[in-house]
Image (cartoon, rainbow, N blue to C red; front, side):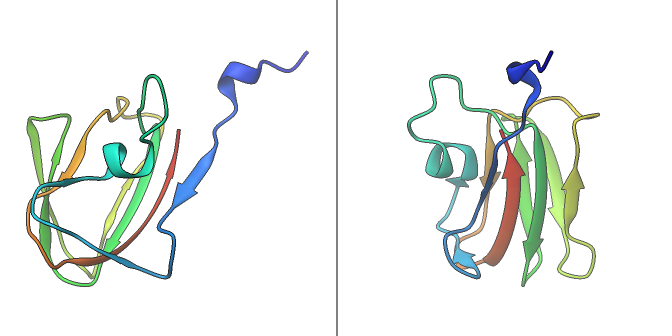
Length: 95
């Protein structure tokens, strides 16, 4: 029997890329109507280097060459903040 709780739903930037504002939270922007918004996986590809703050405490510097990939082995992300404004990025997440 299929356990519906384990099905991941995808979400991504609306266009090819999006541009960040300072301290933009991807979870809040892209899941505004979810009762318990969390990303379970994340692929983040910036065109410029930038800093992410994950779950309000984990600082990650992301380069355009490598990007960032987090899968379900990592803890759920209830906040993914792009610190800098003006970052062109593409992302794909599941929730």
